[in-house]
Amino acid sequence: MSDPFKQLRDALDQFATERDWDQFHSPKNLAMALTVEAAELQECFQWLTEVQSKELDEQQLAAVRDEIADVQLYLIRLAGKLDVDIESACRAKMEKNAEKYPADQVKGSAKKYTHYANDEAD
Image 1 (cartoon, one colour):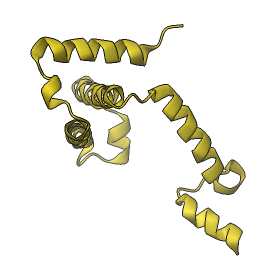
Image 2: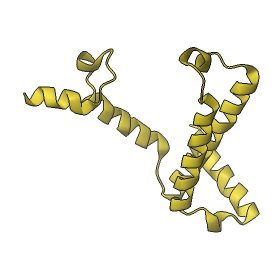
Image 3: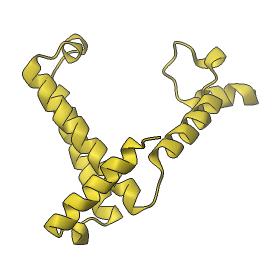
């Protein structure tokens, strides 16, 4: 079975090695760079209405694609540095979220899980 995250991680490792950038790619620096890229993704949607954000023109969509890729690549690089299996981590987190947000209690609501946890304590 092919693991696209591992393939991308290996390609990023090679990319950084060829440029002697590994010295700069500490987990701290990668996490900081990730937040910058996430902010650049947000910037693509700044000042758009909800409707406009769903109807991007090709230029806007191209910019969003680039920023999504930047965010994902930094996540993969960070996960590689810390030996985190992204797919396993995501599946585990989804299981936790399913427990925190039971569908029968949260359907149609955007409230934080602590709101529902407090209801059970009553």
